[in-house]
Image (cartoon, rainbow, N blue to C red; front, top):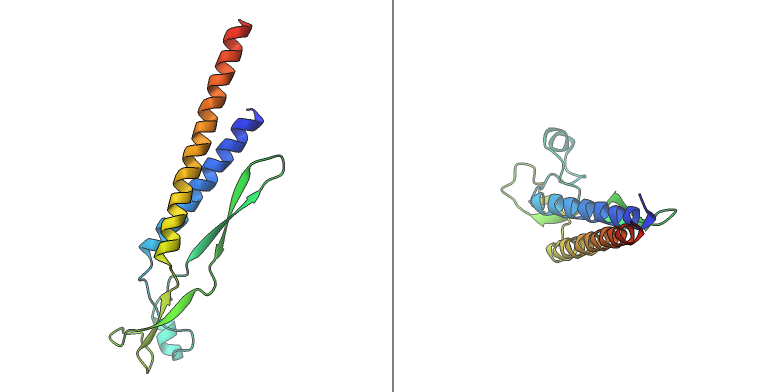
Length: 136
């Protein structure tokens, strides 16, 4: 495989990973849980709040890119929900720190990045075909 195709495929894989993580964050945006400092019995008996993830793309040796997934910080925000069974004495729960605007932008970046890399692959295949047609 040529270097151009390898770089484009790595970009497509990174875009796919970015889209996957963004979709996971949005799907779990309301998966609240007890605050870490809530009483021990509540923390032990209830599932923790979803911890959102973030994607950073880094350059790889020889060209291309790689998606590195890390937990977002801060992972949660305290929110008021006194009806939750895991709420503390003040009615506060841990709500995942998911910003819907940022997630929408991440999905757009993934979409256009994937499309651009697919276009590079298609152009590369056409150029190689033309080169082989000339050589034959």
